[in-house]
Length: 130
View 1: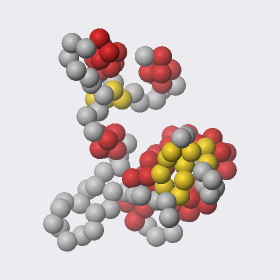
View 2 (view 1 turned 90 degrees about the horizontal axis):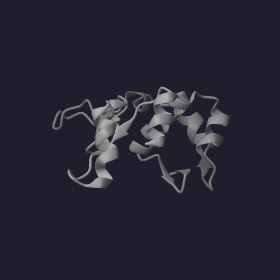
View 3 (view 1 turned 180 degrees about the horizontal axis):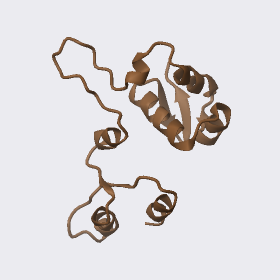
View 4 (view 1 turned 180 degrees about the vertical axis):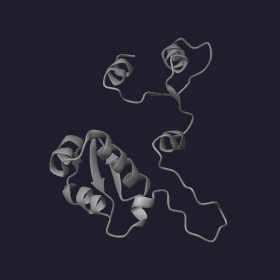
């Protein structure tokens, strides 16, 4: 609840995963949903909310491209972000400082890169996928 309050104070989106009805441990998430937090049932819900989704229909004969920006070869931000991720992994703040991108833009780009399988996150660090 503290994290949700801080997110709202910083004008950030709040997402909540509902829990079992009647469970005392679920009350906080259910209250957040009542107050307008975005309901999340699966990771795709977050990607859809951020505008990162697969617009191609299955069987259309076209390869699925979840992010149009990634479809553009040589997209400047892709190489920029990937270029600053160290072999031993990089923290978000380090990547942000190197790329000089706004928090929300970098966060969205990292999610897109992870969805594309170009990077993965482990222990708070981002790593390039080989």
